[in-house]
Length: 114
Length: 111
Image 1 (cartoon, one colour):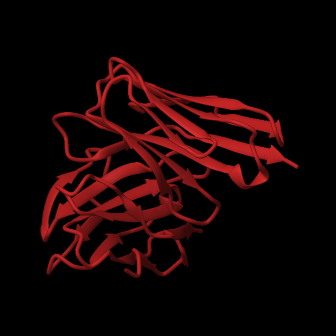
Image 2 (cartoon, chains in turn cyan, purple):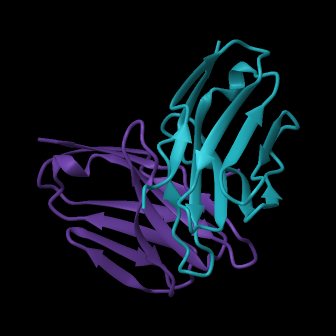
Image 3 (spheres, chains in turn brown, blue):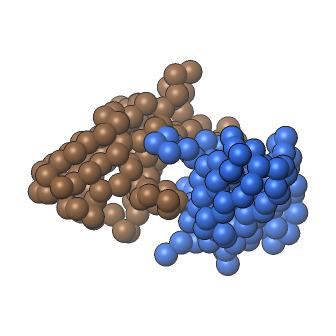
């Protein structure tokens, strides 16, 4: 068990650019979640997948955000036309639904939009 | 809008002191979890409580789920510098499939 892996750990971009983050969950986990967290606050839910299906997406999530989990394994989160307000830590978590729900988080990707 | 409010938001105490962190909501949760997060890392699960009134102990940490399953508390006895971190509660609503996180409590234990 190598844990949840996120890449990159840090991303600095200019306003208006597109960015993509990757998350590799724990291999036997069927659920994958994306959260966003600003400094000193709790994580805010963005979206989650069960296997390859995206089952829920936050109403707060702008159309500029899109997530995929093409084969039910790794996932990507893309932000188009980044804005300064997108600066945050983006956290990925995985779990095995039906096995006593426990979220295992990655170390996150820290995004800074200049 | 945060479903779960935590208090206090910040807490700075001396090593050896006791403290309690509260997690409150007007919503009922099917389960509630507590996490600790260190700077630059993701949250790490400490405990899950499921039954109203349930109490769980993890060494010097005591977790309680409210009878109505709307609130929870975390009590730390004889705090140590290694307890420093951001403590987060997270609740799963009965009709949903994801966890809502609280606003967080940043704890600093001074040696």
